[in-house]
Picture 1 (cartoon, helix red, strand yellow):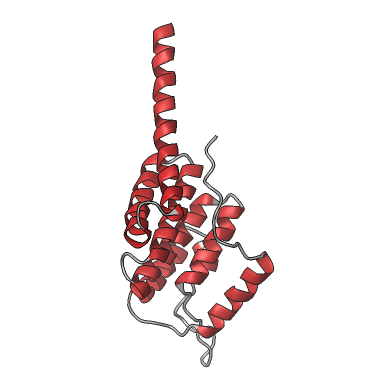
Picture 2: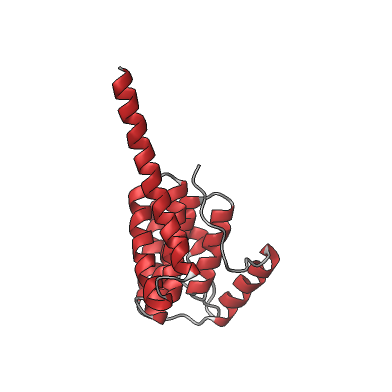
Length: 186
């Protein structure tokens, strides 16, 4: 069974994450640009009843009262929420949150920032856990490019992604070999 390498980063406790989520939501002022697009997109999802988890994740731009407005969620908050969902084995919801984080990271930090590589790796892990090899491989390849650019070929961060890619290819080869053996037996 496939299992990703253990993370080299410290995972904060759930209490720390909840406190950070609350603090992030208080500190971040609404922004224009891609964030506004995502808010409109989430409103459309809410109206159609699709992706019900987005109702709790993506804030609406519409104020709840004339004096209070909801604040936009930043990339770090989306990433932490994605990690929480992944830890609860809710991988499709985690992928959606990691994608929101990736869009915000690229907007805030640049297209090939190291944090984008970390998020892409998490996206790949989630896709692998639900058995979707092609999107996992795509995410891992992009993460590999970013991490090689930042850390060099011999770095631990690069080795982690290289191992994840190898696991996909190994699983694919094993599956093909098993199918060939079954055909030979018939």
